[in-house]
Length: 192
Image 1 (tube, helix red, strand yellow):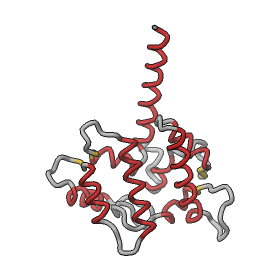
Image 2 (image 1 turned 135 degrees about the vertical axis):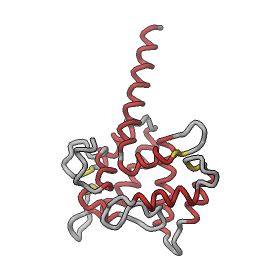
Image 3 (image 1 turned 45 degrees about the horizontal axis):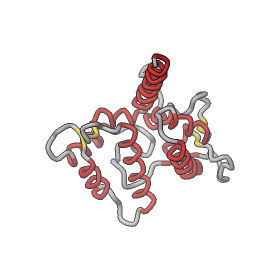
């Protein structure tokens, strides 16, 4: 996968999982299918799809008019960058590894290689820009979605797992894990 992505922005790699037909356009149905592949419930998938496509569509549209279908155009994904985040993407959609490392160094208080829920809360408050209501909400939703996706057994979001969210690689991994889990459940049902 790294070879296929070596010339594109990391923020576009982040969205590649949802662009099933790789046409550079993410329809709400693409977003929904991507979430369902992780095993998320139908109401959660509908809610997350609405939030993502509603808020990210207009900034990525290549015209002044909003898209009536709330599609996200991946080549302009960098236009949807918001404030009050970890600053790990720059305004052109490139990954900034030093900012990512600095974020974890600052908020991982005991050097365990990840963040607890309490540390995530501290990070969310610590990264908040004054009067950036949209950025606060977007950052909160992104960290909540990241936690729900990874769902660490020990309660610690590992830095490498979060890095996989930034480049999109963990999305494929989690979909495959859920698929294998469902195949195992079906196999066990047949044995009964």
